[in-house]
Length: 59
Image 1 (cartoon, rainbow, N blue to C red):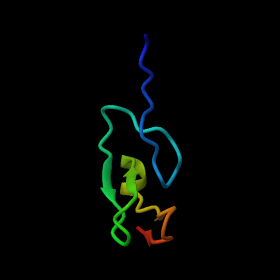
Image 2 (image 1 turned 180 degrees about the vertical axis):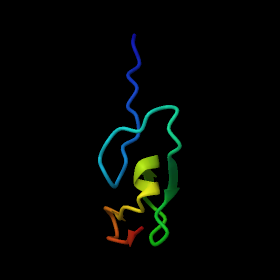
Image 3 (image 1 turned 135 degrees about the vertical axis):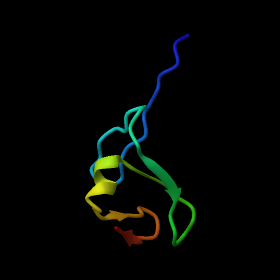
């Protein structure tokens, strides 16, 4: 049996986050129910993200 690895996806750009990338993950500051992943590039450029559950937007 083979286990399939599904990498986390950046909520800002939609790209998979690589293993060695300096990404961050945190729960939505507003609702606290959605785990948000952001890649290094989107963090550096302060690209917006939006929580899919409550609509909170952040830099």
